[in-house]
Amino acid sequence: MERKDNSGFTINTGTDLAFALVVFISYFAAFSNGSLFDPFLITVIILLGIAYITNGIYGFAYASRSGTMITKIIYFLLQLILGGLIVYYGKGAGFNSLILLPLVAHTAMLLDQDWMLAANVGIILTFILAVYLYSSRLAIVWASVPLFFAGQVFILIFTQMAVTEQRARLKLENLAAELSEANKHLSEYADRVREFTIIQERNRMAREIHDGLGHYLTTINMQIKAARAILSKDNKKAQGLMENAQNLSSVALVDVRNSVFALRQEPDEMPPLFQRISDMANAASTSNRSIELIIKGEPRPINAQQDLTLFRAAQETINNANKHSNASSVILTLDYSNPDRIELESIDDGIGSEEINHGFGLLGIQERVRLLNGKTQITTSSGKGFKIKIIIPSQNEH
Image (cartoon, rainbow, N blue to C red; front, top):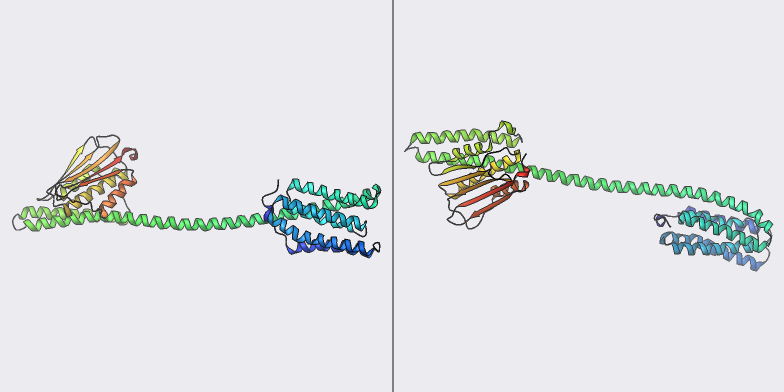
């Protein structure tokens, strides 16, 4: 039945001083009225008062810190016994009935509602019993009880108000501390999100520049090399290759602007994916290397992210074939035939490799495909060319 926040309640020096002061006032009033003459009785009352004050200060602090109900019950039982004996031996001298009133405040500080009421019933019963035992007269009991009960209610109400206010303040302070800590964590989280966003954007721009500008520069370089190689033998064909290189440079400039300023054409304004890949394959073809696009199934609209992923993948495969494969033929297959997915496959007859070198371009493709819950399959071996297959599920289409 005890409140969970009781153990955290702290009693300051002012409360201890008030407790001791009430006891001293009671003793001063008792000894100053001249009704106590027996030295032994005075000694007993003084010793009981010392024990009562000591337990009221240190015992209360210990019970408050421990927070266990058994400790609190023991504390109040000891105080009731000591206080009852003081009232009994004092025989109503002065204001010794005040001795038990500080316990009323302690019940509000240490106990929950039910135990507080039970302890206060014990306090008034202890007072009644002590008065009756030293007076043996019910008239004196009935004359004393109303004043004591009024003081008990008064102290209980105002102490409860003070305790409630202090606990509310402590809760507000704890809430403020928690809010401050939460704000700190939120700020740290926001910093991490901002940093992660920046890194993502850098990676995206790096992919765009590599997949776009890198492809066009590689293709333009290959066109110029091919033109120079046949310039003295076939000037007309060399001029055609140079025109292709010039056209590709114009396209590359547009692609760079889109990458730098993160501007994208609306899908409705762009040629279909298969047409753009076909145009790119024709532009990248040379006299020594043919690049062909095969379309399977009926082309269908796909979302912008899928479109860009497949287009960049086609760029990268053509780029790798031009730079590394020494292939004479590159066949791209764009497969729409399965309604559950769309596939892009690239096969060349180049030198291949015993190990797959995951350069920035291949890593970029795999990262783009993974973001679409797709799969990337790469197959290669020495002397048997290079094959890459990309599968993107159709649930990402819209």
